[in-house]
Each structure stands twice: as C-alpha cells, then as structure tokens.
Image (cartoon, rainbow, N blue to C red; front, side, top):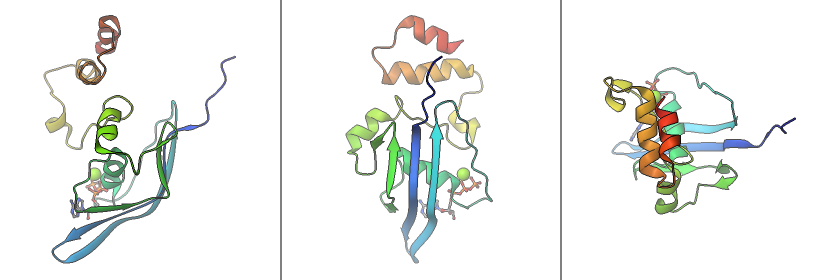
Amino acid sequence: MKPVDLSPVLAVENLSVSFRTEEGRRHVVDGVSLSIRSGEAVAIVGESGSGKSVTLLAAMGVLPPTAMIKADAITLNGEDIVGATDARLATLRGTEISMVFQNPMASLNPTMRIGEQVSETVAVHDSNASQEALTALAG
Ligand SMILES: Nc1ncnc2c1ncn2[C@@H]1O[C@H](COP(=O)(O)OP(=O)(O)OP(=O)(O)O)[C@@H](O)[C@H]1O
Ligand SMILES: [Mg+2]
C-alpha cells in the first residue's frame, strides 16, 4: 500500500497582516493558522472583508509593499517562504503554488476550457513539461 503523506503542502502559522494607510496602520488578519495536506480541499469561510483573500495573497507573496506580514512560518512543501527572495517566490508561483484570483470572469477566459488555461500556466512556468503532459492537463 502507498504510504500516506501527512506533511502539509501549505502551512500557515500565526499569520498577521496589516496595511499602512493614510489613516494609520490597519490590522486585517490576526493570528491565522491553517494547514493543507496533499489531496485535501480546504475552504475558508467568513464574511466579506474578514481577510480570506489577504491571507492567501500573503501566502503567495503578492501583497503590495504597504502590507506588513508577520508569521511564525509559512511553508510550502516544507520550505519556509516568509523570507524568500522575490526571485524564489516567482519560481514557486506557477510551479508549486498558484491562484485563481477572485472575480473569475476577469481572471479566467470564459471562451476557453479550464484545462487549457491550467495547462497554459504549466507551459509558461515549467519548460520541462512534455507535450503529452500538457495535452493530458488540457483534457
Ligand atoms: N491593499 C490594501 N490596503 C488596505 N486595506 C486592504 C488592502 N487589501 C485589502 N484590504 C482590507 O483588508 C480587509 C480584508 O480584505 P479581504 O479582501 O481579504 O477580504 P475577504 O475576506 O477576501 O472578503 P470577500 O469575501 O469580499 O472576498 C478588508 O477590510 C480590505 O478592505
Ligand atoms: Mg476575497
């Protein structure tokens, strides 16, 4: 039997995010922790403005420079990405982690099948991806 991998793919420990604004510092995420294992689908539920998107934008490393991020750890496949360089994060995005941004009509093309759009991302970020693998992804 195949061993089950219980180590998290993405783990966020005690994440806090605040923004520098004209009215002063705005705290929008306070002490969030989550852990996602391979094969798991995790939904974050909360009222509008409660910080769901900001939490994941922090994990992707794509918040604007006005954001201050504090976390005990954010790990992707065991690699701590809190102090990762922009170059490292750019490599990880699209290969190890990616995001369909809110408002899918703006971030996805409704005239293309989802599989084609996913395989396009892989083709751009993984020059080793075989044509066979890309075609299989595109469905
Ligand atoms: N760049 C920013 N500068 C200042 N405040 C911001 C910035 N981005 C987000 N916020 C604020 O952070 C809070 C959390 O926003 P976020 O977008 O994470 O909410 P959400 O839970 O995803 O809401 P929704 O369900 O509407 O998508 C909101 O009050 C928002 O106005
Ligand atoms: Mg949101």
